[in-house]
Image 1: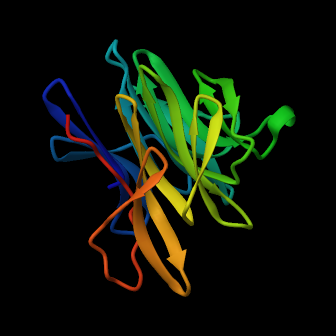
Image 2: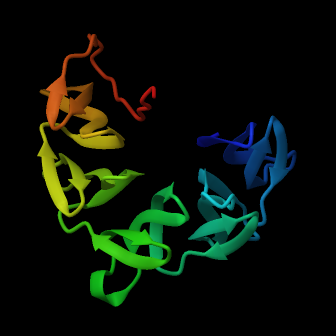
Length: 220
């Protein structure tokens, strides 16, 4: 399972299942009951789910066809290809607007991480090599990721990139004017999980020689 949402008092979970003959396919669970999503002939997986203000369900994921990974989105269980994306890493919904962060598949910004809103280019992430997660609030659009080959964690807010003192930035969450990012940093040969608040590293009780923080949620 890769993502979860609650809508109309029901719990929705998306991810991937493996059948008895080892076929892997994109799956949706509603209150614990699983169903197979429409997909390509060679399987697939679902990675993000959300609901619009008008009640439409969107699921983002991939299908496999002719050995190619094809970014896709299911609207109310009906799949369509994200033609503008080479790869897609996350989806967020605000009102009836659907945002996707992806590597763009159009000539102007080919291969560059970008934010797409309702199928149209919203903003290129010029400083990013990889974009991982996004959040959308009343104050704007936020993205976490990193740049290679210097391996610097990055966050992006409404067109402004912030370089974080770390290795990778895996997830991002926003509460009012506060921006929280989680990921990791390197200290010599050791990797440690890290939390940043508004770009400043926060102390964590972590003495392991290898750790990584992959996601964050804020209590309302």
